[in-house]
Length: 312
Image (cartoon, rainbow, N blue to C red; front, side, top):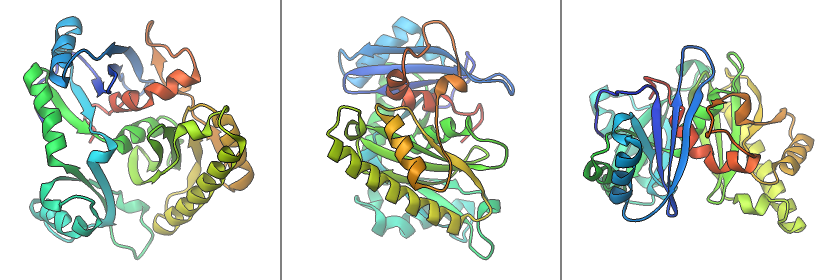
């Protein structure tokens, strides 16, 4: 992580895909709607460092406060009771507590934590915390690419916090929100309230299996599985965080989501609504979304750029 004083407002998110390097620049101004000032994709032409250096020269990437993310298979999030230790001892305590939950050696992990607000926890239950364990070599490779390209990197985020940033725009008052999204890497369900992440869950269903042109029997099976996992997650959230009242389930853009939303409305007691980025984000010329499919394709990188100015 490199900490430098920014020369331009907001956050510039950089997503290093296998086929493209994507950037999204979001500016926040007071209590108004966030503004997507830049959204652009550049075909890959070399290594991560080479392509970042190309963007430094072409769009002045070094003048922005940059954030990026690591791939989903490079980290795990484990929810647990907060260890009763000092801040200085927290990472060591978390490493020991989650070592049996990781699919890689805890000694090879970088550990960070997200505290869950205490006021949402059910009475009598201990404080909760989310431990983020990332593969040290994968994070190191990403950091080195930015360093070699001479592009300042302030933050490395994960999909769950990017989705938290998006969900916060759809929250109403002090009520919580379940936000559900799907990509070709699978589904992600997050629970947030007042812009804070309370819980998350991965769902092993790819967006392609939910598309309108997917076989009807496949879609039906996936709908049933999603509804079941969602209901279990809603029940578990209510048990752990009974002080948080959920307003609804918001379903992010993806191909065929109207059919999924209709199915969930028929099978869940909680209201189910669509999430439309155009309803919560202003876009400059050249950054506007042409379709729901385009929103879906840019959901992650825009979520990264939606970090609060001093947010975690």
